[in-house]
Image (tube, rainbow, N blue to C red; front, side, top):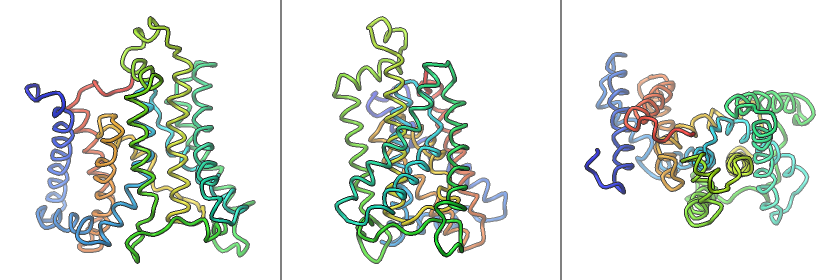
Length: 338
């Protein structure tokens, strides 16, 4: 890899990581008594074999992309944000709270803005704890994940539970707020364009603005940042708050585009998977898009494999773990946050 041009090195390493992970997944299938070739073909067909399959993959990839962009921004600024799960839950909670009060289509941007603000505010708590009290963001963001989960659990069992009291979930938000569907009758919604737009905006801000440059300098060399007069505290606030806002927006998009309501176990772990997405993307906002599609395909493909031949859907988690290990193995510590 060392002889490859720098522009090609990162994509080549990511492709190598995915190939190594798929090879490891094939080995696991073989050990489980399944023929790897046909099983991997079933997964690929389930994820990409037609408009419905592709739509499901993109629906899964959308929250992964938004959370992944946020995590990548935090990593670029040297902040290890593992709290995208909780930030996404708080964004979903804010979207539902606003959506139950506002029933007009004009309010959709306000609902999504509320989701982004809630996620950003939740992440800002971790930034404040780090800069004011010296608490590692690894610990604070992890603990805030649990607080967000149990807060949502309490609310959907109590104050926000639907009137029928049948399930731990809220009422549906007004239909006027639902994101439009593309390629009906598939589930593909307009949120996929929001994810693409967020990645493009993050790329433009990170590489073509002065504040984006300061963020990258702090992440690459904290000592150089201090020498240049860059405030580590302010940049940490910015990195974590923007990261949380992206995850919160993912929660709002998931509410308005897919679930229409908030319920217990709302997220299957999108915030945690976003860490792997950001690593596979080499912390690049545009690289997050194909990385999110890759992980979305793994999720959909594993579910298809379970339906077809009875393989546990947990196989996706195994392959995702192999992807993370492969990324770390081929990149060393270069992409780790400072």
